[in-house]
Length: 335
Image 1 (cartoon, rainbow, N blue to C red):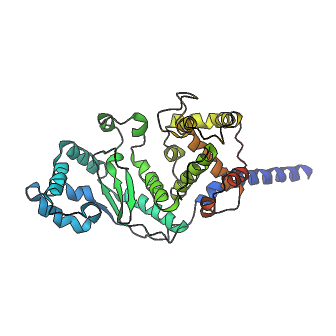
Image 2 (cartoon, one colour; image 1 turned 90 degrees about the horizontal axis):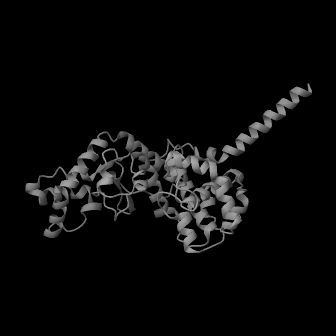
């Protein structure tokens, strides 16, 4: 009898332990499928633009203007504007990129459903936010524009930043390999959620110390995860599988270094470059250590906070008390 009781107690403790460990993840899986939008229209600007007869380009632009005001809201009687657009639509490199994009995204049903899922998750948490129409286009792999942009006129997604690098297109334009790692279709909804967060949720704050920046980054990443609960950590963080293995193995060592060297409350620029700057690796640790380790640690702090506290994501995101979040997170990785 005593043995049975002991076994039952062990099982109960094990179940509670598992529940506590996974509770932040449990909070992310919500009933969203019944929410708006039930259907989603995503318009392809590049398909319309590159289909225009170049012999009658000005009139062709006017014929699609009403459907694509976010791109064609200017004066289409301006010869310079027409010439610029025609040069873009007839440029050899842009034609190649558009052809690759059309081939990669010949069937957009999966992409549209993934985008719809992000919007439905957003509606679950923030029903008052109204997302404008969504458009797909190509930028010509223009480094000067983000891959996803949002304003009151529309959400625009540059599909040429999500072609993968199978034929070396990103090598051709000189994109660093650590950056082209993220140029594949699995990053579209991740980047979409990040743009929504930056455009609608995040409150501007002056740069603080390292801990403050970690919490700030962790909040952003947690929101992205909430919009994409099945997103792998490698995509969420922009790491390769090898880099993910490194941070999992050395999380405790990174934390011990931060605490042991009194870095949490430091504000010097060199530390910020080390822990938040993008790049192929973090030299201070190893060439196998990924960049932006501060973002990784910040995400773990927020996950721990959501696991150990009965709060909603919205409450957590509104809470600007960094010290309170840190202390109540009970974040203590093993070295």
